[in-house]
Structure formats: C-alpha cells, structure tokens
Length: 120
Image 1 (tube, rainbow, N blue to C red):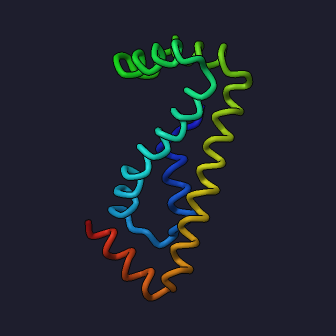
Image 2 (cartoon, rainbow, N blue to C red):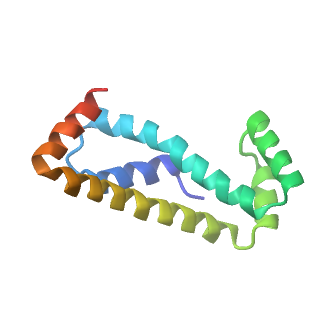
C-alpha cells in the first residue's frame, strides 16, 4: 500500500524544493483531503451503488480495516495497480498545475503569492 503522507510530501517537494517545514506541513494537510476525494471518487465508480454505500458507511465508522482492504481487492481487479495509477495521475496533475501557476505569475509574482499562501 502507498504511504499517503510520504507520497504527498515527496510530491510537494518536487513542486517546491525550497519550501520550509512549516509550509510543507501546511501543504500536506491541505492536499490530503483532495487526494482522498480523488481516490474515493474512483473507488465508488468501480463498485455498484448499494455496495458503494456500505463501503462509505464502514469507512466512516471503522476506517480502513483489513475487511475493507479485502473487499476492495475482491471488487476491483488489480487494486494495487488501480490505486497506484490514481496516485500517479494525481501527482502529474498537481505538478502541472503548480508549474502552470508559477509560469502564469512569473518568479517574482509567484514568490509573492507563495509567501502569502505560506502565511495563512
């Protein structure tokens, strides 16, 4: 299984190698729910509606359990590869968006915007 915190941390460092620890922690916390939503959307899209509700209910009450992991592996062929592709696609999108933002605002404007974001 992919360690989500490590994945997000490494992705952010790729996008912003000069980021300080405080900014990194903030960006990790801001990025987690976005990645989680992306993963959940893809998973729910692969299972039928009735089972999808069971899946969401059990996640809400118990979190990710061995039962949930086994269920996903039984319902989604090649689940580890399926999950890895979601993470890879997310990283590609994230890095592109970050690069586009940097190019749109230029180095000086980007640094000013980045400093504003880090101060929040």
